[in-house]
Length: 594
Image (cartoon, rainbow, N blue to C red; front, side, top):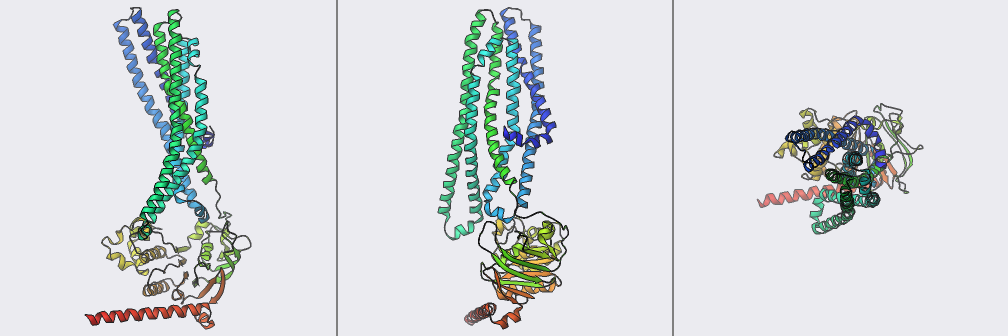
């Protein structure tokens, strides 16, 4: 019953609906007591030959009236109780989604997408069933079962009622035992479903890679194995679930046998009439549903308990990002890093060491280095995806970002990550993601600045082209440029391009950077890149290696120093010149052939 205690907050919110629903259930139970009484009296009057036409009509009208009232009461209890349970599902989904949106990247690094989706679907459905069908079954068991038992004892025979109830304790013991087993197995089955959900999401998202490597058969085999495991674990649940109804039916059958055997002897002994025995057995038949409902109740609450525990585990997870807000407003200004040492949560290895620099407002920062050198780690700290400890600070305009409201902080930034994510909607909606009602001319302007406008207008549907799941229908360069347009459309105070030009050619890169320079005067820009050409015009360039800054300065000073930056720039420039010369040679050869 712990799940009902945990849901106490919701029952308080919806107490009016549940009270009305339970009152309707009581009235239905009372209405259902009338027909057996009528049947018994008709039989007794037939036996004594006292039944008249008027009496029969009166009984008929009474039954019709009871049927109409029962119909009305059943309609209202369904609306009230099931309506409330559906609102519980909505509330839990909203809370869970809000929790997901507030959690840090570290949380999603530890949790699989499929598992999180299973919490928001199967688990919430199980809890919703507990608050709907669960309330119905326990209320119906207590109200209808109790009313029938009392009526049997008062209107027929207390002794026969006691005899009929002898097998019931065995049913309670067995169904409770089944319920405890079911709870454990259902939790395991839900975990298996989460794994299958995760595999499905991953396979669909990576279908292009799977097809490229010809891995379809192996992927299908993995999916089949997981699917078989889900079926196997759910069959174990079903086997225990299947024991409830036969057990209850067997108990009812024993009660029937005892009632008819001892009831017949009581009729012969003139302790009760034949009509009363018929009424008693009719009432006993009405006990079948309350007892079945009791078994179903144990089933539902164990499922609901397992699912609610899984949801609560997520809801009670603390975010790695602190909430000690002392500054609601974060004005734009200089960006200062004073990080002596930083490690990602759960990792012993130091990711950043001795990162100290100041980027003046309106300047451009370039960060270069090999893969894994720490470029993106600096960006993630600035975006406050992770927090530093008290001895390290990242500040904007003198305000430590750990003390800033995270939503206000992130509104300063227009961020284009390495892994460009596009929603499965139109190009127009993807660019206007932060402001769906923005003027179309601004959308066009942002697309022109990111050098994607001509590509878009070449599509048959133009800006209304559906990009597919994660932009599957677009090339890597097109996805990058649409993501840049999405960041540019609000003209953010700080534009961050985290290796966001890697999939475009040198000519397109130059065009985009020139557009940014001309149209963002006075605004701060941060660019991480592998190509030195992307940062050569930056006011400050940091060269990263193993989480440290090994060189800093502008293009001229770093070239003069003849360090890593100079050697890499020279190599890339030579490679670019050779590639350009080769392209010109090939074009000249094709012209001669023509």
